[in-house]
Length: 589
Image 1 (spheres, rainbow, N blue to C red):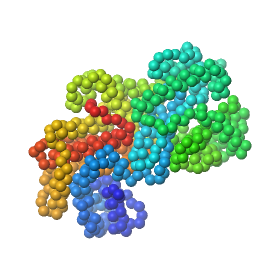
Image 2: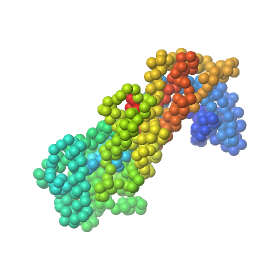
Image 3: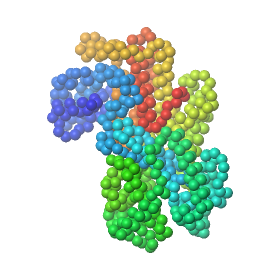
Image 4: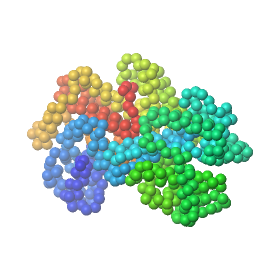
């Protein structure tokens, strides 16, 4: 049980409160560590009652204060010193070890990224990957079994457009994976543009789509298999860069036949109906807010809707989850409502456990990018553009942050650091706000070291690690006997026997470190990584102020080991929090 739960239980029991109430952190640290809103005219009475209890007179609290209708609780130095000791004991697992846990369900499968074979992984897929990976890590940290899956689009009209383009551009080519993937991207753009511009070519591409589904053209199948292999290998390279490893890879082609069988079975049962040669589902018959969608085309081809039904059933057979989360762009919100309503009539237990989480779009100053106009930004090109800006900064300064780098790094090391910082900058920009809204990506702000950026957080963590290395070199390291001294001063001050030395006063840093598990729990419960981002930025700012105003390493200062302990605890939490966001920390910057 964490300190927040203990205080909540104590208030509820002491004041005989039966209903739920909110225990929050005051907006300003000077107003205490927790705050409770009392009914009008009851704050003083409640505070007096609480002060008389053994809990209030124990080791956890130093003061209870009334401000208006608020009762503010101040945690003790004893609590903070032992909290820091706990962090140093648990290290990066502190947030997971003390979070209440996600509760039920205990087995969750999370689907995200969902790229399309023979099309580039674009920035929309990148957003899904960043959000899905972070949510997976956050929930997983609380002890829930998480399985990651991606659902690859390897059949459909986009395949036919790319194959038409490949045949026009010269067919199968040689080269490395990146070169071949770029070529396939150009082929898709060629086919997509031709499909929109020429009705005759549109019919050719539709015929290719039918041949691929029926596997009736050997030469087309050969080109398709080559392109599919190239795409999947390239996606895997990107997943590795982004720090994602999927447990399951599902493909549309694997459920095409089954989806036709399911729709036709439920056509006979009256769930679906025929309309102009196609098979449709009238969602408005089940909910006036829904609409009609096609599940099988006139060409007897299953649509995404039909395949998603079969995919959901197949996914559950592969992994019997308690909850299935699917993460896509919010453009698919209405689509998912209809598809899930149809699924509810077929497999209600699967539909009921399926949750659709949607995110906004990643935009630039010119607005939403379009593959039709040729302005599409791929995930790889965005990473490379940000990475190049990082390298420019390194070339201008000799290093990214000169004060933290020793010696002359090799170009390979520079490149690796730049990539880690670039991906961190992009992930931070995506995760810094609630996942439902659009993101306006600013290249310069994303790589700034002035705060509210990924590099700022990475820099703070590298700085803390640098302090710890220097402490070891100077021989002033954390001495565990400091806890006895801190505890002595805490008790002596509480008993008013001696004045606590100023160097052992409670710092703002201590007042933030212990909150980390609460933040992790809330982020997991609400599927909201931005809570962790906000917390880490505040923590990094407080640490940087601590670093600027305190002489941390000082052999003549009896509190120096404790300051080193605070620095170590900060490093662990920054590293842990960044890891939950999927952001790596370079060894130097």
